Length: 75
Image (cartoon, rainbow, N blue to C red; front, top):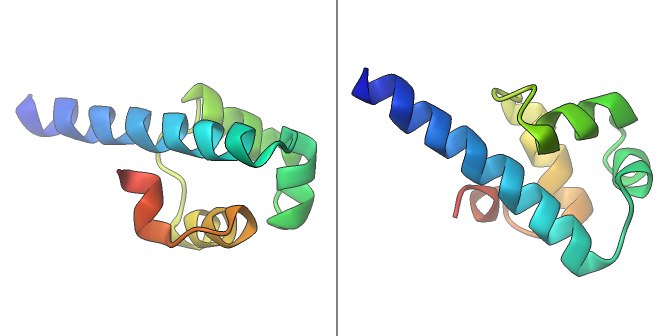
């Protein structure tokens, strides 16, 4: 049970961090989706937590589009 909770908390952190970084950068979800070469629906699902386990490739694309190291998404 603890492992699941820990993974869930990490997923929540990643979702919140992506949203926070996107807003800090002053860009829309649509702009981020274009910059990261991802579907807008993917961005929306990640930020809302509906897609709690994005792939490493997706996280790398998001980090690059946000101009941060991938590790920054997990802080």
